[in-house]
Image 1: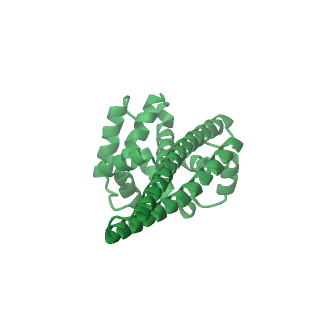
Image 2: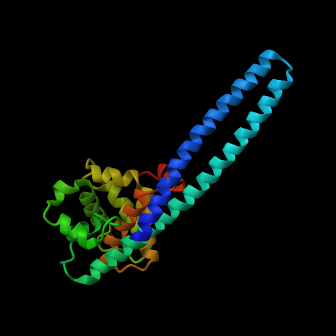
Amino acid sequence: MKELRESRKATDGLRIGLRKANAEERETAERLERALGALKDMGPDDQLQQLCEKRKRRRADISEKVQELRNRLEASEHRVRRQEAYIAQSELLDFIGSKRYTLSPLTFANAMAGLPFISWRQSAIRCRRLDAGHRFPLQYEMFQEVARALATPPKTAEQAIEQAKKYLLTSKRQSQLSIQWLRDKWYFFRVAIETAYADKTERAAMPFKVFAEYQRRTSSPSRVDQVMQEEERL
């Protein structure tokens, strides 16, 4: 948890630095445009020409800085996502192995609600006195729909994907927001199923693993994920 907090702090610092650099880049671009406009109005002028060249160099320098910050931020965000996934999965496995609670959709939801920001124990303690439908209606309903879509999970990921797809497209609860949300983010649902099967998840735990992976991916999607999600809506 400490390492994750430090990574998040570093990522936040990079975001702030990138915002400032973007603002500076816009300002230098505007200054360059004004100088070029003045040179065009004035005609050949050594002083204005030198000023334009100076501002071009400044624009190039700040653009290079912006790109460097973008690359560092992307790498930092990727590191945070990996750390969050590792912690969430480790906590979930610890919860399953603890045998302190009867395994059910509600106890899993309670344990997972705060991950990876707090431990599953803290999450379960904070959530168990609250009504699930009042606390996180959409997330809980979505988990229930995932469990229904993957009822008696098939042997292969391909079969599970087709089963889940058919369920979402033919469910009698088409008007429910949870169904609409899963259809809109079908790409993440599909990839979560593939990941769960690739990890050789036990069939009984499949809905829990798939939903945990789905939540992880939708909480911090990469630019590639965002583009693919737009293309794979049901």
